[in-house]
Length: 471
Image (tube, rainbow, N blue to C red; front, side):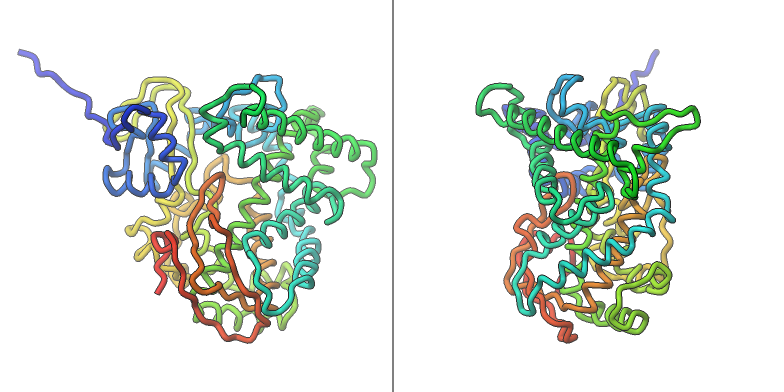
């Protein structure tokens, strides 16, 4: 007598009627946080995009984060392009940065790029970061109403343009920023993803044409730098000069891909981290007051030096807690290269989409009690592993620009908060939007006041209440 054994069915939501997997994918991209949170709370640590369908699986929690992120040869990072493009296209070359590379090629390119983001070199950008921030503050007027999300995006755009490309504020910066923003919109556009028809008037054709314009712009910039190598200290100038042990240099095609992804990541992550941190401080007056006391005591109104950044422990905790509760990166996906197992489930097909979530991990109550509460003080008593706290991911593919971003965020916050108080406009609606990073859908409407210490929270509406406990 034999006993039949049955593989367990992977839990998950039912497929959308008529549309099937495509419908579920659209639902996911419409609101990834809602989809991930519902999946985790309803079905547990291992969830299919669709019930029983093993072509897409989400694995939640530190153990799975560690397994996926420490096995880069088994779990490859996919292309950022979610639409077809020929190998010899501008779109593919723009995508050929570290995020989309794997194996030996990724290791070789990362090794070439790493010196440009070494801590000692990053620290040389401190003066540029401070000067650009102060220039922006000089344009603000007390009691002015601003979209702080837009302002922070413009600020980080100028910083990354200066430090990455060596461009001053007037040198094509706005043009590059606008092109970058449009490219991000194309990358996550359902019309481009699900209607990839190269026909007049179609979004897909506009995406391909936009990629060609972006590539031409980057090629021209690289050519100018090659022709004038003296007295250039920006990241791209360093990458043009860098060589491997055998003399290998980055080609122009490689420089285009790396420049594009470094610009996108450096610009988007920092601006959103700054925006959310200013929002959280505006809604937590006691924490804002304590932080200002620390800044004034140590800095006396001046921007921090590199040495002083290490003497601001509350600023450190505020930034950590902000990037825990509202991490710029919400999720990441990988594709398997060989069969693997997660828990009781075996996955044998190639090219399975395996997802993990920074956001879900950061909101697990067993790791962070009262996870929706903004509480910088929790960092006095916890020391999470890199797979429990991963705003910049973890493992051998951890964000190469993490040191740059953290220094930039702290310098900007310390400079802004000593000069201005930020008050959210009453009855503002704050809803989330996740494209590449987590952003406020309608912007962040704030009034900038002279730093008068009159901290008070404002009534706020929107699904921000699902992510942060606000009194």
